Length: 326
Image (cartoon, rainbow, N blue to C red; front, side, top):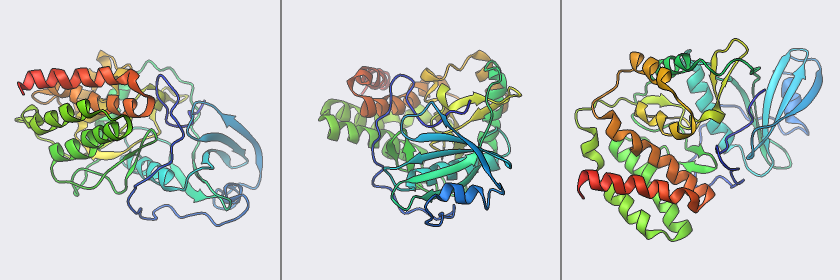
């Protein structure tokens, strides 16, 4: 069964509107303003002559998801009647970037468009899930191959801003990873926490960590690798041949270790890491940096779901401040 959209491993994500995103290149052509642009696309560019069934697909809480059965094959469609196409454009660009590495399987995006009465949609390849979820070594190997193949000459960032859950994720290009991660990831989440909850304590301590975290990257060569960005168990599946599939990305180019940031909610085992590091060798200080990448996602969960995640985020910050003696 296909999984519909981004969601938390513990709670439903609120249907927040996307905001403050930079202009996006219109790489995925917008649909014509017909009464049913999804049906129109499927029956023209999708090369179908009839739609035989439309079924609801569960698993998501931000968007509605459907399985379109046609005489030309199946399509997976996500719709959201509350927002414009920016979120789906970001998703499509991420899926296309991962697809082009020809490493790990992802659903190929076909179309992003708007409804004439408001809202937007994305049409993509339908993948029939159902294989065993036990092949973690293959997942680790193929993820590493994607990181190795997906490089950027522009530095750290992405072509557009996108979302992590429903939180805006700022991807302005930078040549400095430590600066990018400090400002666009940790700093952005800390500001959200201060603005939303008035949490000046976590904001101030978090910024002290940002200002002193450079020593955690000594003797490390950091190349901009294509990251999935939100790799938890709900965004990992296996097709009928038990090949791993990753979906619902929050892609950007960053330090490969950052893709383990949701490991607390992904269930990666020893076989996953062993296979991964055979392709992308572990770098000095990896263990010391591991929680730094967890912190971004704990902060995001704090901002999305409330105080239940604050203690985990603050504990990581406090541990680093003690380690760094600041």
